[in-house]
Length: 138
Figure 1 (cartoon, rainbow, N blue to C red):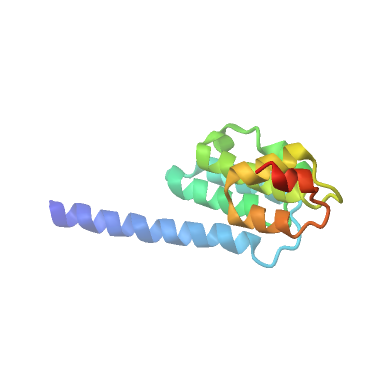
Figure 2 (tube, rainbow, N blue to C red):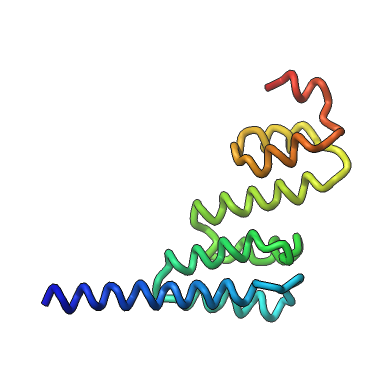
């Protein structure tokens, strides 16, 4: 019986790898994502039996350069994005978008420092419009 359950576990793992690869393939080479593809991608993740794998696929989606701010704002309120790891990714992605603006407000600066993510902090440091007061406050 344990050999059968071990085989079932390996089969499940292999299927998860293939499903994750399929999600990744949908995003590869896509410069932008149209709303229909976006909605179908999220729906597939919602229907997936393995929510850990679905969460990983949604993390890929959230980090995809072709996802617009409007699309992010539209999907982030869906229940499937309510997990702490996905909320952290959403916050990081939003900060990276906010750092594209010409100036850095004190609130954005503080959020960038407190998030503790190197990608966000590197982008923050690359900004030439950081005030001496902002640098001195941390």
